[in-house]
Image (cartoon, rainbow, N blue to C red; front, side, top):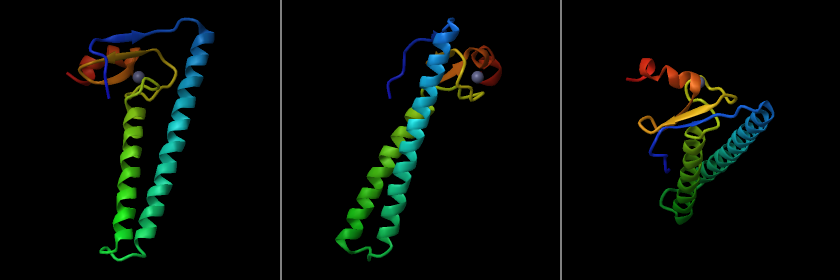
Length: 121
Ligand SMILES: [Zn+2]
């Protein structure tokens, strides 16, 4: 994942635009959650299917490979969701202006960001 190299603050003053921003954040979050759950169902299915096969069987190896692909894709999505601007990773708010500090590689709301020296040196 590529992160900005300098501190960035994103503020939206217009209440209507804030509402649109917040709805997009929730939409992104919900879509990511659904996809993560979909990967989990595929992982569970591959794991259950593997239990019917001996580990020396090529189908077992194929299912194990399939399982690892789903795990990889799921992990990428979880990281993208975690590191996204959609939420404050400290107070979990989806509705505040956000600040990115390169040293921490995460987005925090402006309120939590003001407390960063108290939270993380
Ligand atoms: Zn916060």
